[in-house]
Length: 139
Image (cartoon, rainbow, N blue to C red; front, side, top):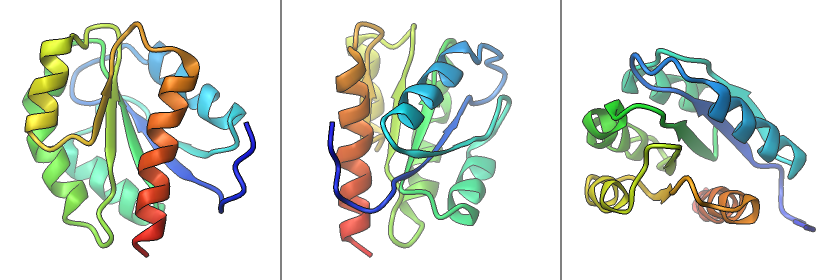
């Protein structure tokens, strides 16, 4: 897929005590293969840490890999911190435990996009790319 815009910088991480990083590593590789510059921030991060990394790395988008339900607890705080940056940094959540009702809940809490476990490769990349390009246009 050709994308003539500037490089997209994506932070990919796992929140809280969720120790399952296989999904995060898979998404990081998927985004790299699609031409993104990926900053992998590892596991056990809190919203303030993710926001600091996004700011320090001048991220265009943040991806949260979810394999426990902690993301529901952190969603609003994370969205608020990332949206307080200038320009705001959008956040995508996704993973094996994200249901349609979880998606609705996190979107209501300010998360910009949520992809379900059934999402195809292109759907994931497109969600990241669309949000990142919107942020780049706001600079």
